[in-house]
Length: 90
Image (cartoon, rainbow, N blue to C red; front, side, top):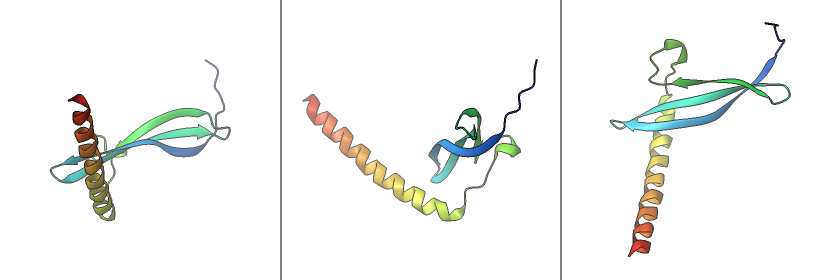
């Protein structure tokens, strides 16, 4: 197999996920690795609860309060959506 000279010049978060586990957030982020021209070559995921220490990170304490605030706002939106949807079914 012939070797390719590929230069990865950019890393960008493609997606992230936050779950509440016993009122403490667990987070993961999928990171894409791109060439100068914007072609994604690969991706990998890091997580606060990864079994592999190389892919594990600590969630900074200053992020927990904003995450919980966003969660509460999203919960209001989700409850309203559910209520509105139920009224449509009647």
